[in-house]
Amino acid sequence: MSEKVYKKGTRGSSTRASRSRIANRKPPNRHSFEGDTEGVSRLAKKMKSSTAENDTEVDAAFGYRIINFLAVFSMLSQILACKKCGGSVTFLESCKRGLGFKLVIVCEKCGNATIDSSPLINGHAYDVNRRLTLAMRLIGIGIQGISKFCAFMCFPKPVFQKSYDEIVQSIAVATDAVKSKVLRKAAEEEKKISIEKSQLEGLTVSGDGSWRKRGFSSLYGFASLIGWFSGKVIDICVKSKYCKECEYWQKNEGTVEYDEWHELHEPSCNANHSGSAGKMEPDAVVQMFSRSESTYNVRYAYYVGDGDSKTFKSIQDAKPYGNFAVTKKECIGHVQKRLGTRLRNLKKEVKNLGGRGKLTGKLIDELSVYYGLAIRRNTDSVENMRNEIYATLYHKISSDEKPQHDKCPVGKDSWCSWQRAKASHTLDVYTHKPAMPMQVFDAVQKIYEDLTRDDLLSRCLGGFTQNANESLNAVVWIVAPKTISSGKAVVDIATDIAAITYNDGFRGLLDVMSTLQLRISSELYNFIMETDERRVKAANRSASKHRKSTRKDLTSLRKEAEEQNEFLEGQLYGAGIAE
Image (cartoon, rainbow, N blue to C red; front, side, top):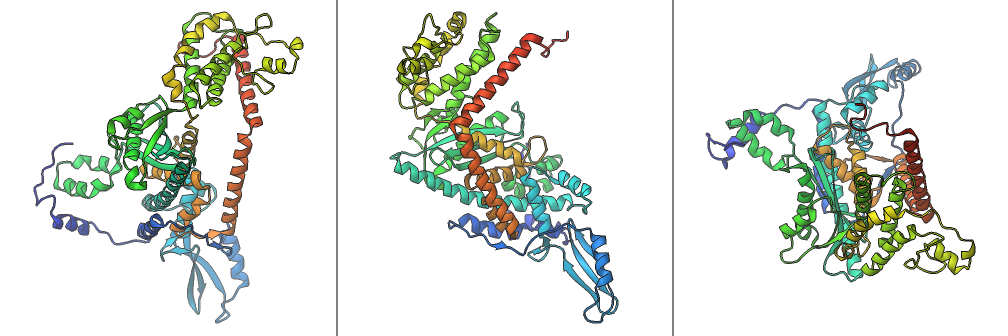
């Protein structure tokens, strides 16, 4: 931006800004009542400072029902009479704001009486409008989706865009307050467990970033840090390259009005990142490391990351803890993927290496899985890791004529079927599967040498992964889908909700609703409790050895079938294939 010129007064002048704000103040209208951020902010401050567990107040008598207005109230007007005069009554709507309205009971003799169709928040904002906006955001729907939903359900139009934006801002304030409380609690839990495990130098956290769009062209991204022992989100940071207000005011740059606006806007500007989108992850992680001591009074001593970005180098350069050096730990999942990626690239580069009975996709997946398992089974010894990695490779070239299982673990509990047969004295009936061709074995040797180096395997000690961060990323983009355009406020809400539900389950949203002054019905409370219970049961089933083995086998079978089809049909899709 160009250098600012201040023609009237100085930047520190108080009269100029206050005069501008007073001049631009508008009288309230009935639609502006829906965006009550002031009341939410007061409760949010209480929530941020609260450390006690809140008991949820359930209103069993509260709830909404869908009715046909004309049919129901036409019938009621025929059978009801005024209690005072006994005259007939009719029913009308008035003061409609979104889905909220006043029900007017008309008596020609006694006058009118009104009833609010929905509880009023702070005496003016309809509960139903705030509740609808929050509910739709939880399933990734914004104002356009709400409008479509209301139209097809024959509901009134939802609130206008301005009121919707104000409601979104109220939700953002509430979710931020609850998130701060939840993250602080998670940091204390992680700190306590680390001390119990005699890890006194600091916490172990896994970090990962995610973007709104692929290809590093995204305007929005975020990064998260998750405690290794607790498995809970400790910190999360959203980065944005775009601010709608800045874009609007850019045409007035250099004017006194722009300077006045910029002075007031700068502290709350949504654009908090400059540079490429790819730099969002390193910047966000460094920011979270830099504030760990002031926010939680802890240091992050060990960082679990992948090799896909320069995040760890950025941490080293920033020196968030002075002379205290942060130690890098590798994500086993990403190390395992490196083998798969390099084998697939090798298959493309070396002629006749791929194809049926050679280096197929199924074989690449098997080698990658075996490589990962070898690391996971030996997270306390680099030498044992390396030995078992090569054991899996030699296991694949073994045949009945030349078994090569010397490196495989022995005994009845071995993963090696040949060693199990030997332990049970059934080698006389044991038959090997078709061996991996020696052509493939010779070709992959260099890759295995690179991926069994001491410096790499030593960073795998402990068996760390970023799986938790990647699961969190998926939750964020459910709340703020990548296919639907939205601003930073929605991404903030999405990351807040994801962190809250990831740590505390859906019951964490009860605090959000309390902060928004939304009543909790028995139906909602029961749904949340049941959802969390199902979530735990599903996670336990998914983590079982049988389910893991089944998923792996199904994936392998699908890839084998796909390769068989490609072999029979030939290549049908690819760049320039039609020419």
